[in-house]
Amino acid sequence: MQLSYALTLEEYKAALRLHLRQKPSRNISYIFWYYAVPVMAVTGLAAIFILHITGRSELAADFIAVDVGLLWIAIVLPIIRAYQVRKSFKHMFPPGRADRTCFVDIDDERILTSMPGVGEGKYFWTGVIAFAQNEKVSLIYITETRFVPFPTHALSPAQRTELNDLIERKAVKRKK
Image 1 (cartoon, one colour):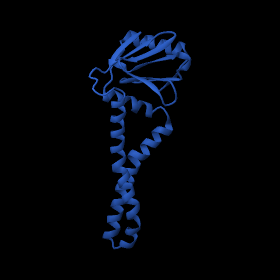
Image 2 (cartoon, rainbow, N blue to C red):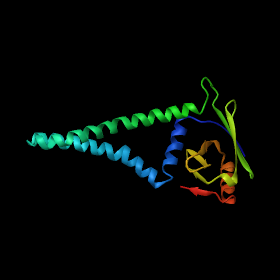
Image 3 (cartoon, rainbow, N blue to C red):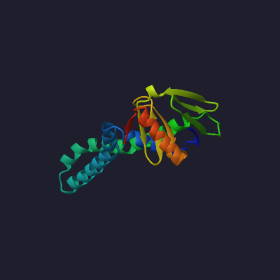
Image 4 (cartoon, one colour):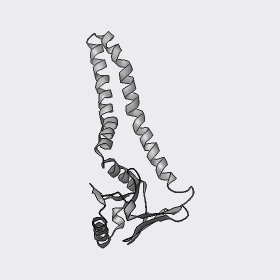
């Protein structure tokens, strides 16, 4: 089965989201830093205002430093993540390259990936440790944190069935 596709930034972000959901520890860490910390920062800010209004300014002063730190983390962390995702996506392709076409050739023996003018990779099924798929992207894991992403829509229904059969035959662990 041969696939040809142009990976977009949105598909790359979808691949990272799917990768994030593969391990509970990654998911919990993401929820903590990107949801719980902002909630704690806003709650702390509200508590400081309430303490100040009720006349407990000395108690509010004790919370200011912690809340400023939480607010800084809540604002800066998403900005840094967005920057790093874009930077990582741009590094996948050489500067000035307008054609972002990628190729994946999958058969019974190996998986061959290539980006003309950039490089290629050859992975045997014995080196594939896992497979994850949703409606947007499919990931073939080479290591615990390294994967080959490709958009699921690049697969025809017949190719999708063939890929699922290959995954089952090669006894690759299927992730949710």
